[in-house]
Length: 296
Image (cartoon, rainbow, N blue to C red; front, side, top):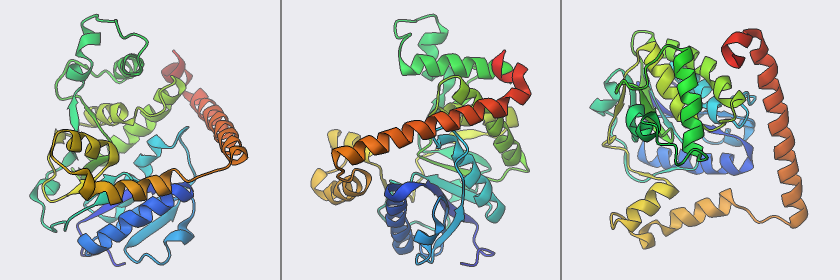
């Protein structure tokens, strides 16, 4: 696909057969509802996307412990080709036509479908409430607090945001987006060696603050999407109907949770655990060159 006249793209990660299959569904949605845009994909198997003409697929080797922080690489690739990119998880769907002229997308910086100030998200912890000290959120807060101190960032500043990374955009801002990606590269292993492997929403917020790249919430008018957890909340609140969304739930369950024998399940778990150990060891070795930053 020629990209010279296009201002924005969608982008995602797709690793393993399950998420490649889900990404292909997303690509077909975009082919139908946003035919003048493309989907940039980093994947471990580009051949699966050969027949999907609206996909620009690039081979990528996983570099973070659990892949979450590898999102920065597909953003980097997309911003080499386009002025703006919309990151969307591979297991999401597009439900309606996407306008080509979305004014909110042209605002420099990061626009997120869900974000909040870290001082609000972690306010109780900052105020000394440690009743939930064993929770996942408290661990994320402690690591984020350490990372912020390393970067000389004040978490009490309301401009420092945490974002839900399933759907967000980046629009170029005079090179600040490049500095943002560099800062994220520094922060990614910091979170991982401290035991937080899915904390990219915090890392993104800190990296943006350090780079001076603005993060803002937007409803993203023009992008109608399906995400299973979000849709369940909408259904519970009477904003959506299960009978209308059931086909999307069924397709996702079928592809994301295929049936395996007990032996296959054991093999998959062992393989994932060994891969996790290898990736963690690799991150620890790589970070030794900056021992003071990562380990003190």
